[in-house]
Length: 213
Image 1 (cartoon, rainbow, N blue to C red):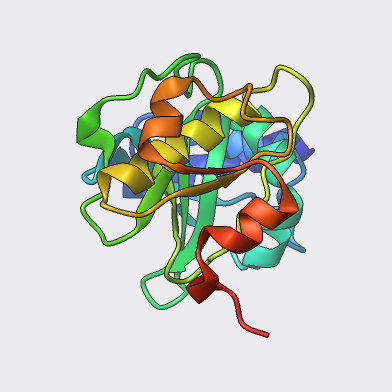
Image 2: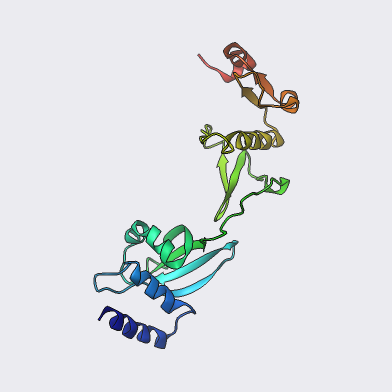
């Protein structure tokens, strides 16, 4: 009964005109349980590459009266049904359309992205943390002055820290490194370009103007 109803509904949709793969998307979402109170799944209206990031594909759906909150709750099921990794979902066209920004589930990001100077942000004190599926992931020290890097041993914390410090130096910042292990993780070039502080007294003496009582 459900399959017959689904097929009949899609015949009406096809008569109106939908992009290639619409039926497959409809059936996948229907099977994943993304349906309204009447048992209807969203309808794929358009699918195209993002002009600002060709890696991302934008899926436009008629949500069939299914709230965005439900889509967000079922994000994992939607990703599995459409074989994608979702970057974000948002209303569009006056809340008449839901846009899904996604990349293929397999090979969505390179395993290794070597640094190139072209990645350096032109914005004042905006530092690049890495690459996300929608583009560079950045932090602006003018708005977020503190960053906590966490992870297991060997996960790349030190590499990321040095990448951020290198960018700060390239932007003309005066860099102070507090390393109570004696600076063993920083080769000689860092000692030449940065002010190294190995004890609490060193840190307090580095720049009195940085501290207030």
